Length: 325
Image (cartoon, rainbow, N blue to C red; front, side, top):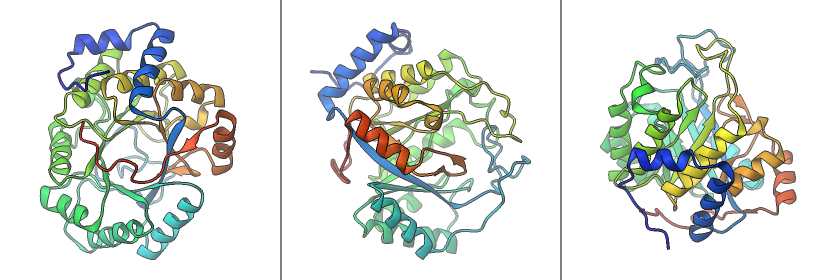
């Protein structure tokens, strides 16, 4: 039986990451079968509840107020509209509903009160509720927990050394502090990153090292491939290959066996065969629906075909409450 470890060295992770790909997929699939149901995939939907106008300078993000993109600034959605969208997502098979607001950090105001109402309403639909709202303190995390929040997303984005090349308006330590605040409130943590930002393999290893040596592994680890958006500093970045995604997914699966490893942004460019390889490598969660915040995503019909072709089964909501691993 595999042992859940929190003391991985960077050298160990580098050795895993650079394992010949067929061997790496096999090793990851063995770990995956030990801790998860083969072919069971969690279906999540992500909605932007407050779009654009963010003060941060994340180089990949079309919602930054600093860049000229096609994204228009929009005020926060009404509570009823969001709950209706969650019901539609549930009707299409999603069991986790994620909401994102283009904020640098949470502020104690009417908008945050609206988010708390959204969380309460969606929780009553018997869906796992996740939000990504930027930085927050312990008191705000507790308010979200009391409202019924299941998970909080706060990605590290990349390794600590490369981080300053992508974001200058928030420090790596501030990201880790938010994760700690969420963990203290007994909300499960969703945290991963993006590949294709111009980082090296060692930067990817660096990020995986940080995640896998946290006192509590993230319950969910999204692996995103950059979707380059015109108007952002990274608009000309070359798309990453499926093999790079597989290496990240398989390594994350081996390092954090109990985590849900989410095949996230960039999936729209993958064939069914490429997605199948990612599932074989340990991915067991996807985002469904036409959009991922502001970028295109696989539609429900395409995912229905994917599930039927590969014989995948959707994971039920609340299958394992707050796995501490």
